[in-house]
Length: 312
Image 1 (spheres, rainbow, N blue to C red):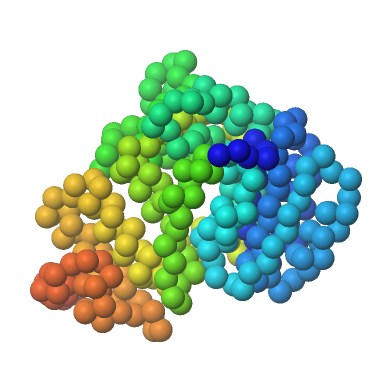
Image 2: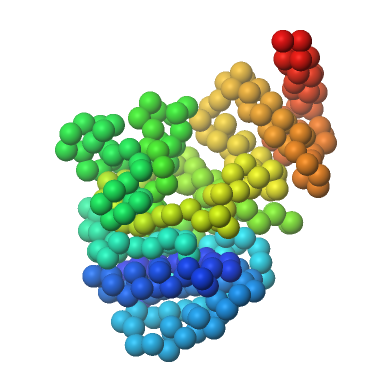
């Protein structure tokens, strides 16, 4: 299909008016200019709307499009953003991060190396703590001196799949037309779903990513961010968490032993947390897709383990 821009830069945001300008100024410094910036406000109660509206009145070389939804989480915002996008590539950039000055130029350079080739869903760049430093393992450290990129499935993040794990966060830039086929599932009452669920589905259908080492975004985790919530994100959203784990086990062909470990961990995480997030054994079995008898077995094993530890 025809697109109006090469890139749609997409930012979901929630109460980030205090830091969003850093991203905005980095967008203004881009050396590549064929893009739009879409902001979906996930029900902010601060002055985000006024702030973005003021930027829309400034003379920028790129269009800014602002939309607001009831608070429903990042993945719902992404789903809407995909419907709105007029760019061939869909580049998600969180509101507390910012771009290196040549980020989009670098993305387009790498995308041109796979343009027209079958079996690719996009490219992924490196995260930096500065424009020249990254906390992630370099590709050359895994694949040898001189390695600047690899073509891999999203599974390369998992030690169950490879002994050359691509660690840390990477900035995925997807073909919009492909990503629209892999929107995020939405669950009533839940507002978080790991992006891995979409990446894994793409991989399961045979799509690879060209992963390159160049730093294109600077990320610093803030106290009010999703990452800082740790495991609580999954405990609060068991349907999404359970679906992601079930699919991962299926796609990577887990053995029965591996599945039993997964069921046990899910049970412990979701039955020994505080209310109102605590699940019953039956709920655990339903969410993680385990036979109920296996969840009862997990409870028995956990009880025996506690007794053994108590005697030491």
